[in-house]
Length: 271
DNA sequence: AGAGGTACCTGGCAGC
DNA sequence: TGCTGCCAGGTACCTC
Image (tube, rainbow, N blue to C red; front, side, top):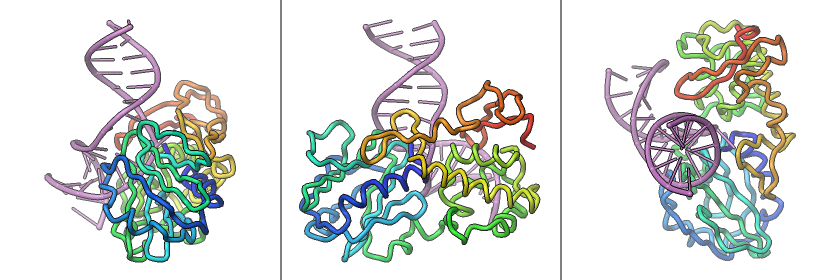
């Protein structure tokens, strides 16, 4: 479900409700997620104040004085703030109740998500150490992308989806930024020119930040922390639009599997 | 080191 | 209506 804009939207949505508040109670109904929810989570965060919530790649970081709760939404996860918690539904795996009576509820049907606890600085956690730059910061530049792409025989699409290259570019926004850049997703990364990298870097930034502005993309059932959908879906040019007319050149948009993931592009204007 | 494939899990949908 | 097969927004981990 969530790509970077959805995770960012979730962080921004929940933070004002719970940052600065202390945890009153924790309920873990299902600990079998991508990794087991650690036994010590409840005792570690109960009565601790949540200082703030930040994001690294698609990981949400909940900063407490004594450590950090790391949350990932996987493919199907979501978080909501509940003012008057209803009875937990199926797949509502974790509830964290705060001293202002608000409840943070983690829901994840496929259980590819995770809720972890670390007392290290979170950036030193094994899952975060190998991550590339954040796409929406100045650390992600076209010069960097060009250098990384040299000698890479993999496709451009797989290259930009590689978390060690740049984080936060998932399946939807990979197709979209390649379309805006007029680059074929299957082209070898090492065949990108400097100019291509400039265009692609800029378009990755534009696509992701536009999606954040619109509250993320709703496919199936993604809703933000208030239970409302995102509106970026209506801005998608190629994702999920095989058979449609290309909005730029009028050719027919194609779907093709690249690296086991469905990929959409226009054979007319992407080279 | 890089590339490719597998695994984790459930729900929704198309097709029969 | 009910079954089967396929697909889905992520990514760690394994092998070659």
